[in-house]
Length: 305
Image 1 (cartoon, rainbow, N blue to C red):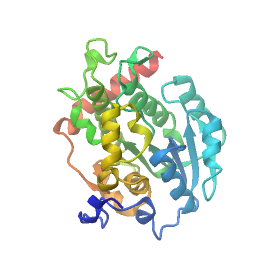
Image 2 (image 1 turned 90 degrees about the vertical axis):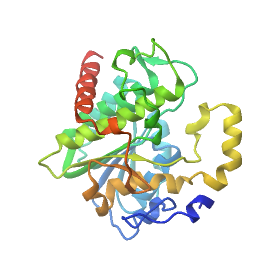
Image 3 (image 1 turned 135 degrees about the vertical axis):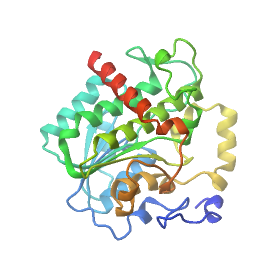
């Protein structure tokens, strides 16, 4: 537990900054549930899979290659199956959807956990800035491709970040999704995380009238390799303060696992969660018209791929 966690109290759900994935699932049996998690082979995704398997769920873990996914899945304390899902490669995402369907899985929860962060220079996939494409479009393709596989009370959890507050004015720069009109690593990352928030909001709206739910979550600032693209000075600084302020992997995985399986998350559907409690996002993250526009634009992008 970080020093910071020792001085923060639990929120209304009974959980807080220092709660771990094991704690938010304590006493829960997930036997009979099937949960898909992207990014199963490292960081908080790996920890989420471990805890979900520990509680009895069948975990469908994805990584960039089937080999990486399978290697991770064999380490979990329960049932887990590895799938390839390179989120920046539409053919890989479609292949993952097809494989999950072919295997006959009905899904209780999808945790859109994987992502990339703060690429130092502009990189693209299919003409789009890579963080937007990987973090948002890849997960959009995966989730919408698997909607028919969702059970009646399923949940979709999309990892966003407090980084969404760094998104450009207006939330999404629809005229610069390529990054060609200007690229800043933090702004582009923020835009991708804003897109994650808006996707979850629109998805919850589309689930209206059903018992399905959607959530966007901020995992916290976690000591994982996601920060590998930060400059060396920043990395050294994080290493120095990490024991004091950074969340452990167990703490970082808590909110996504809470949203995916804990009964206390159900009344919070459609919300942005941090520390397993509701957090208020930037105002435009709650703009229903913006969320609908992003969904329509995402469909256009996917159809053209």
